[in-house]
Every structure is written in C-alpha cells, then in structure tokens.
Image 1: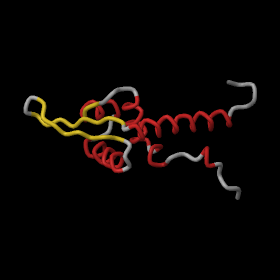
Image 2: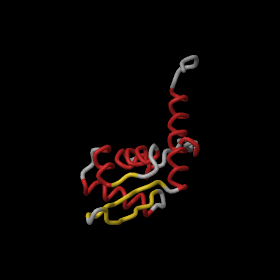
Image 3: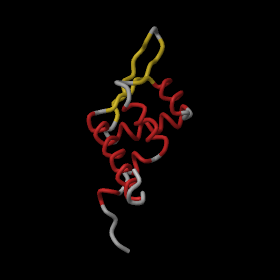
Length: 106
C-alpha cells in the first residue's frame, strides 16, 4: 500500500467533529465564553470541557477563568499556533476536495 501524501493527511486532533466545531467558531471571533461555545457547537458542558482541555494541552487555545459580576466566567481564544493549525486544516480539506472533483468542475 502506498504511503499517504503527508500534505493531505488530516490532523486527527483538529478533525474530530467537536473540536473542529470549537476551532471553527473561535477562528471567526477574537474570543468566546464557555456558554457561547456551548450554544454554537451544541456540545454538552462535559463534552465541551473535555475538548477544550485537549485543545489547551496541545497549545491551540488559551483558557482564562475570571469572575464577571461575581459569576465565574471561562473565556477561550485561539493561540497563534491554533489559528495557524485551523487554517492549515481547512486548506488541506480544500486540497482533498479538489483532488476528488472531476477535471473541469470547480
């Protein structure tokens, strides 16, 4: 079996649907709080928390915990590395899509 083209191999950390949803949302905003991410991704609190932990451990997101009007607030933003990796991931998906389209279709 031939070796896969490294440039087309998907990043499994990012490609997991829940994490891809989180990173996609974060790539379109400066930062987001936990509740906003939960509502926009449709993930449960536990699932979102678990995915955020994995992304933080990998250095893709920065998590800041604080209090807003005496209520705990968790804020999440992409790191520079996270922003680069999600862009690379979408570019890789585009290349894969283009490979699968018959010549002459856009």
